[in-house]
Amino acid sequence: GFATRLVTLTVNGNPVVLDVQPWVSLLDALRDRAGLTGTKKGCDHGQCGACTVLCDGERVLSCLSLAVMKDGSEITTIEGVARDGVLQPIQQAFIDHDAFQCGYCTPGQICSAIGLMREGKAKSRDEVKELMSGNLCRCGANTQIIDAIMKVQENQTR
Ligand code: FES
Ligand code: FES
Image (cartoon, rainbow, N blue to C red; front, top):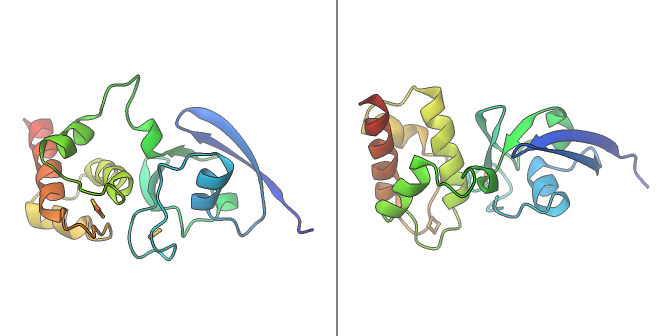
């Protein structure tokens, strides 16, 4: 067999040790090894954003990240976004603004939106749209997704 490597991650606050082959993506490690299937695999090629998670607070495409490269990192997946059953404002805003239909893109959209707001670069609606453009929605909920993010950003700066 091929040599595997131990990778230690903190996932949603919990230590996770995985024995992975060097080419296993963070996405597959999370879904298939850690059993966290909330993170979705759309294209597996960096083109849809469905696999977006937070790595040390920054949004990353987990399909393009090798698990071994993330050794020691702190990962937040959609399963870890709500705390103690309390939705984060962005999650509530998605509900309030009908920002999803099938829901397939939603975990990635939420993680990407959290990362975007943390980056603090996108102020205007156009900037938010531009910096969320890596997260595709086949259902066409993009307008509502931007509405939800704008609402949360407004509330934060108030
Ligand atoms: Fe990663 Fe599409 S699954 S960008
Ligand atoms: Fe269906 Fe976005 S809600 S792909």
